[in-house]
Every structure is written in C-alpha cells, then in structure tokens.
Length: 306
Ligand SMILES: Nc1ncnc2c1ncn2[C@@H]1O[C@H](COP(=O)(O)OP(=O)(O)OP(=O)(O)O)[C@@H](O)[C@H]1O
Ligand SMILES: [Mg+2]
Image (cartoon, rainbow, N blue to C red; front, side):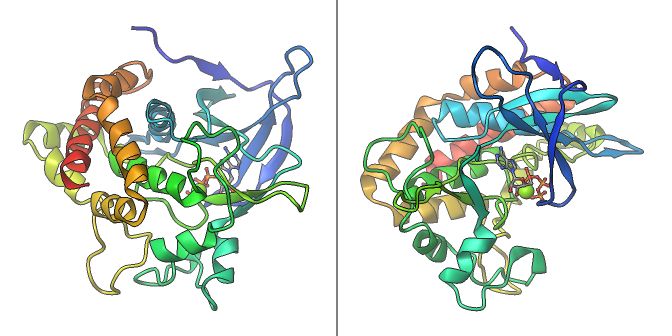
C-alpha cells in the first residue's frame, strides 16, 4: 500500500511565529509553484520524552484523512521533518485577508463574564453546546466546505464533534475551534475548518502500554474513558463521554443534518478507516494496531449510541 509522503521543510522560509496554543510554533512559506499565491503552513514538532516520542504527527495526519473521508472541513496535513525535528505541517485555514478568531474570543459575546478554557475552571462553565450554537448563529460554513446546501455553521461543528469522538480527541477547547472574518464587513463570518487534532488516537501512550491493552483486550475500556471534559459539565461530576457529547450535539440539529452525519460515518467503513492508518508511515506496530482498534470501536459506539 502506498504510504503518505513526508516533506522536508528545513529550507522553507519562516513567515511568522504563532503565539497561540500551548507552545510557540512556526509558520512556514511553501516554495511557490507556478503563479499560485504562496501558501503558509504551520509546522508543529512532536513532543519527545526520555521514554520515547509522542505521535502528534501521525495522529493529526490520520485525523485529517479520516475527516476527508467523512467530508468534514479539516486543515490539510502533511507529515514533515524540519532539520532534526519530526512533526507535521498544517495548511493555513485563514489566509489573508481572513482574520481568525478562536472560540475564546467569540464566546464572551454570548456568555457575559465568560471564563476562558485556559483558566482551567472546573466544569468548564459556559463552554456548552447551546452557547457555542448561539456564538455561531450568524456564521456560515467554512470556505469551500463540502457539506449539503443549507447547512449552518453549527451543523458543521456537530460534524467536528462526531469526528472527535471517532478519533478519541479530548482537546476541542475554546482555542481549538474558531471563526473566520472576511475583509468585507458586509460578508458574514464563517466557521473555520477543524484544526489541532494531534491529541487523538492514543498519541501519548507508551508502546508497552498500548501492547498490554491490546493483549488484555482493554482498548474498549480505554475508549470509554474518553470524556468531553473541555465542555460544560457538572463541576465535580464526571463529564459525558465524547460519544455522548456527539450524540447530544446530533440531537440538537435538524434530523436531516443528523441523518447526513450518521450516513457519512456509515459510508466510511472500518476497513476504509484502518487503511488510512496503514498508509501512515512512522508508526510502531502497537501504535498502528491500537489506533485502528480505537477507530473501529468508536465507529461502532457512535453508530449504536447516536
Ligand atoms: N491550519 C491552521 N490554520 C490557521 N490557524 C491555525 C491552524 N492550525 C493552528 N492554527 C492556529 O494556531 C494555534 C495553535 O495551533 P494548534 O492549536 O494546532 O497547536 P497547539 O499549540 O498544540 O494547541 P494546544 O494549546 O491546543 O495544544 C491555534 O489555536 C490556531 O489559532
Ligand atoms: Mg490548539
């Protein structure tokens, strides 16, 4: 099976530094091809420990390819190396003249006194589906989104939550979704395509732990521990699972929207999802088996529970 390419971006010039997010990252300019406008990509290195490397690069690549299968608007991702660093590049979803505003900046218009996710307030007050729906009320879907005509921005956002549940991404906090503002003030704001999916598919487990869970048939218990702790929940109580959150989100939209997203998931068969994993280089055998099993189990859970 053909593998996804890995691009050496060591010679790409630095366009700017991205101050948002947990650690500083670098925007790089792709060498121009023909007359096309030069494109910018965010280089995100993986995290390395004494015990081994995390897999943010393959996790983010697999999620974007799975998103493509479901036709969810996602940042295109390529595996990349930059000097001696391993990582990924994420194509700029907010090229000029768009301006990107993360959820953290749009929520206060809906929730007076909104406490941002970075404050780590227990129970994540304010970051609820109802409030996000209101924050996205005047937005349209992302540029060139391949979603049915008539879909609202929130209808698309619900697709992001279904994808998060599928890949076990617990990290959809209020800086990991955004809106885009066009230069022309007469044009509506748009939901930004989905980005930052490095925290999925058990990216930060050690291979010995992955293998033990595979051998002991504990992957099913592991996926059940995937909670939507970044969204409002009873403080002190247990947050719902990612699948429960996706199910709740799907119950908030028009039945045609719900049927559409479930249909997309049904159409993406387990073998299609596993093939994405098999095409991804740089994964150990336990990481590959574990990620495939997570996709298989979560697809089943979503189809049963939504
Ligand atoms: N493809 C993209 N297009 C436009 N902006 C992006 C893209 N990817 C990331 N960003 C911007 O860069 C910020 C940091 O990137 P990202 O969220 O991917 O990394 P992070 O540092 O791992 O975040 P976190 O703190 O959530 O772990 C995002 O909050 C967003 O504002
Ligand atoms: Mg982020």
